[in-house]
Structure formats: structure tokens, C-alpha cells
Length: 162
Image 1 (cartoon, one colour):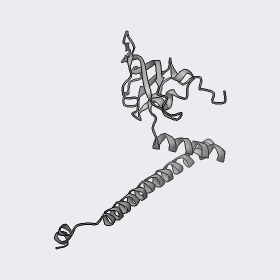
Image 2 (tube, rainbow, N blue to C red):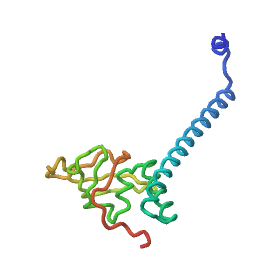
Image 3 (tube, one colour):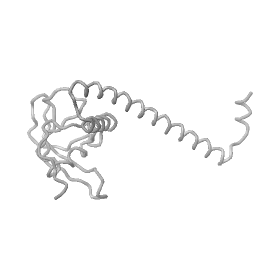
Image 4 (cartoon, rainbow, N blue to C red):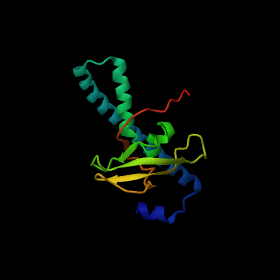
């Protein structure tokens, strides 16, 4: 009976806006609950480890922050490439979905877009190695904005003070 009465009555713009606003606040609240639960689980896990290793409180807080960032936000190709000198040219980067350590890209060229100073986008090229077999010619790297990239051989980081 309720559904038929609602279907026959037209909704005003204000009613639709109010419903959308309520839905948005509900989704934000759910996301906050998930983050809080994740934080509690990670903190408990790290505190157990810290007691065994004898870490200082500052080291514990730093490790907690790193662990949360690592789990909450995974890295794109450019998140990793932009922290290295020359945008990571010569570095070996792989995707998390590739379990084999012999599957990676050796970066030869990175061309960032200069739309904004903080924009981490662009094009990248490199030699593709799959299960130990490297291609002869460099080609465009696909999936740059997917959040599943990691560095195989960390090295000299870009000095942001210079």
C-alpha cells in the first residue's frame, strides 16, 4: 500500500536532494566506520609486535602510520616513479598481481603531463620482462593508474630539498 502511494505522488526537487544528501552522509559514515575498524585491528597487531621487538613509542606511531597508508591506499606507477630521480628511469617496477619476481618493467622513459604541479599522470615506456624473458624493444607501459604497483629494487630517492 505504501509503495503504490509513493509511486503515484511526484517527488519534489527538495525531497530528492534531501534523500541524496542523507544517502551521502550514510555512505561517509560507513566508510569512516571501516577506517576506524581497520585502524583498531592494525594498532592491536602492531602493539603485539612492538612488545616483542622493544620499540619506542615514536617508532610504534611511525610504523602504524606507514602500515595504515600501505593498506588503505596502494600506489600507482606514478606514485612510485615520481619519488625517484629522473622519474625512476632504470628502475624495475612490477604489479602486485604478478606473483613471479621475474615479471617486471624496466623503465626507460617517463613523460609526465604538466597540467598541474601535483598531477601524477603521463606516459611511460620500458622493457617488459615476463618470467625472465625480456623483450627486445621498449614499449608503452599499460595500467599506469591502477593502484597495484611496487618497486623491486629501491635505490636513491629524489631529494626534495634541492
